[in-house]
Length: 140
Image 1 (cartoon, rainbow, N blue to C red):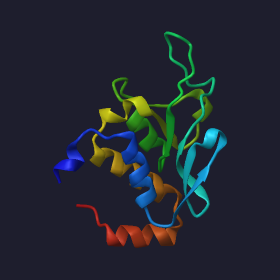
Image 2 (image 1 turned 90 degrees about the horizontal axis):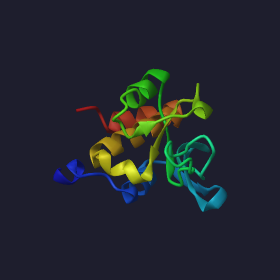
Image 3 (image 1 turned 180 degrees about the horizontal axis):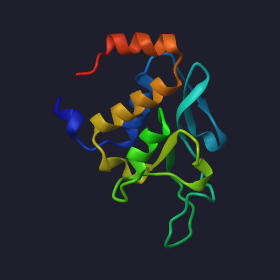
């Protein structure tokens, strides 16, 4: 599908996360959406925090999105390339997640974003829900 190859947009984050099964949306501080499965967050929009700042201005990033990942290896695969829009901070050392600024979401395709969100959901869903989803969506 050609639409999957276009640059992702912030609306895609909301659409794709909400489309996963058994998802609820809670709202954190600042009314930021927190997408959950079984009461566990898998994607959430973060308030500006002192650990995620513009290195040139020192200003806190106002648009950080957190995505859970399955493992430290998955995290490193996303953040180790300096050109990648994904990053982490010392606050997230040892935490199975990666960060992405909303202003950089267009640097990945909608397909890549969908895969990231599906993987985030799978990392937090119960084994039963994950197995059912994987059975209905076998890898290509």
